[in-house]
Length: 254
Image 1: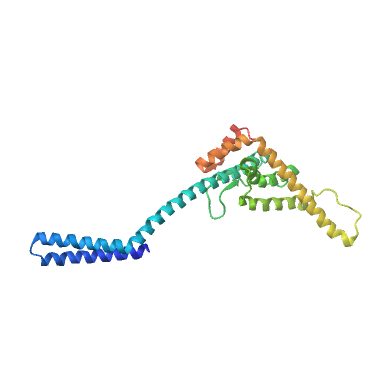
Image 2: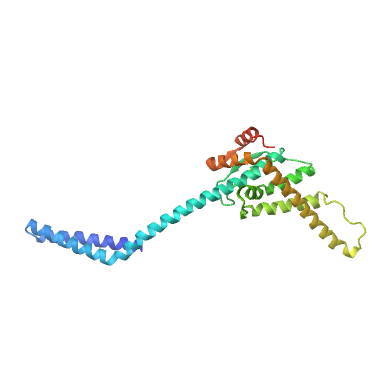
């Protein structure tokens, strides 16, 4: 509609200019020329207003609507930014407190094509992982979800990928690292697979619950530091490894 209106206006202005020239050339008296221009302009303006009143009204109304939508978008953006800051701070706090062997390299709440925010870690080559470290890895995955629930009293889809990661870590914990505990030894061969699968699922659930509880306790113990970290992230949006280490040390994150 805007393009059509602009094209029409351009044509009218062009015709008006031509008309002024023609009228001017055919008028011998200056006063008559001015009078004709005034009458023509008045007639033209009346036509434009009559023909495009609805269009002009619609444009003004849409402009107001756009401003309202933009204000809501900004408000929603601030809300999401705070949520992501809380979420990523939860991951960073737990990683620092429970996994000192893995340094936090970067925290960002700037959205990209893959996520709304992220915590990056320094690559570590470890040949042996201890049970406590494996449990801490699962707890770290729960850090964002736990922070959302304890700080904001909400649960969002921002932690969907984290929950999947936690489940995969728990499966490795139970299966690959042989930490499933005791299984029944006197089982008929035909029932062994079914019993084993059930035992694995139960063991995985137990591990996930323990890791979640560990994450909750860690966030509660470091709640004050987490809130400070959220404020910094909302202002700076990104923190590098040096800034993170200094913050964690200054705020006694353990």
